[in-house]
Image 1: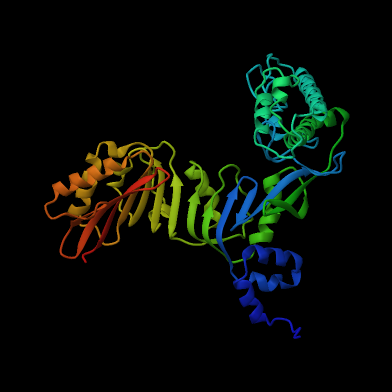
Image 2: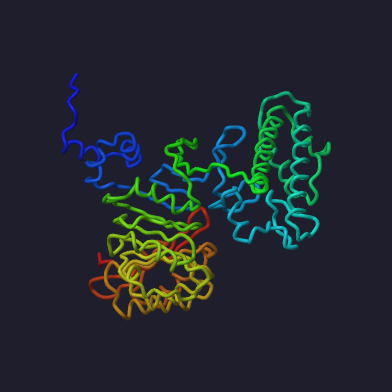
Length: 465
């Protein structure tokens, strides 16, 4: 058997065509190849940043703040979306108190007398302005949860089958929606029809109790001047199962500390990305030496300016092949940006008057997600078709308008009206109308409806057959 190592050029070729996730894992385990690895472009098909997650193709990486000195010796993840209240948490203070509390001056969310979710996700029946009273009330709720747990342990359903069911969720919906937390009654427990469902309910109760205890623990830590140990854990998910890759000291700023992860994955590399999606929830702080060559860029969320500030420092190329962004409820968004003006394909989602707005655009390829029913009155669309014909738009120009609620009947009627408007027009098929522009090209107007309810109507200039 030949055990000769790969030559330098052979290793570069292997790395170039290696799956990027395998390559990142290999470099973390074999530092000796890192210099060679940095000299070879890292090719990624889909790269997504979202909250505290990075998705590389089909693999998800999470960076999370965890308390690692818990009494049960199991690390407890704090950052992310809290399983009890649904609040998003990024950072904690030295005692473990969550950032949404520290940003409020230390006041608990329900302590201002307003009807807000408490730390456990429920509502207080009484209004109170005292943190101490709120904490006491939460301890009472925790005690009730422990009594419920004992009820589940002692409950014997009629069936001894070992089959779980989603009906267990009905029980927890009843629990979460209670104004006054209380023990299960006989009717509620009968939802659990067999041993499998009872077992699932017990497991969920254990998880809720642990989560509740960990929400109260920071306030005990502050009272007793106890400073827990926190770390940032880099976790890679394999087939939905977490795998701990790295442990990093936590300095109080998750996004700042996560730069070490960014450096490991992307720093000092030539990174080529087919499709990059910006973060929707939390900002990303990149080291200054990270650059991406991007073909397709998707801005998630409605804050275009914030997304632009995020992506500009890391972009290493213009124009983009494709740019997609949302405009929220804007009627006419500002498109006076180089990144928009130079994009070869532009997709704008959420326009209120997309067809009227599109008359003033000169993009070669455009797709608009229509927010309102522009086609209910077809005058704007007919005017757009006339504008294209009168201004002799170039071959390859293509505008597509995507809508959810436009009926197929309305699209067909629109094409029929256009056909009657131009003597030289004719139907290629029942979904496509051809309107000659001159002896070299024609304007084709077509429509299609998907099974999911979405439909589109499209204008494209093509050479004359």
